[in-house]
Length: 103
Image 1 (cartoon, one colour):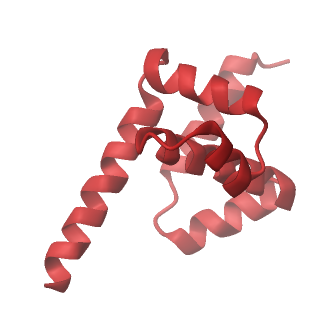
Image 2 (tube, rainbow, N blue to C red; image 1 turned 60 degrees about the vertical axis):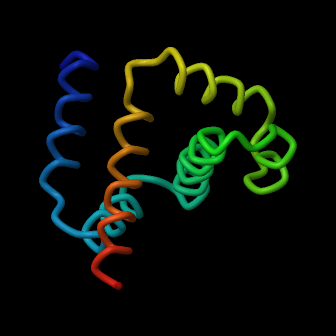
């Protein structure tokens, strides 16, 4: 049996092979349930809201996540491996670039 490390690497490689939102959506829908996609999306949204310094209550109301989940996201945002920070920065950079090209 392969190690979970190999499984993880296969998943990461598969994600890197996707080229568009449409491809990512198709893959995620085949790989995950609708509720799993909703949960992951809510966690990213919570990280974005935490970065904007919104309160836990606002985040709970908006996302439906528990305060414990939000606390874990907050901890990882501050003390994790930098994954949230990397993605949030890239999303902000992309949004900034899109806004510049609109004007």
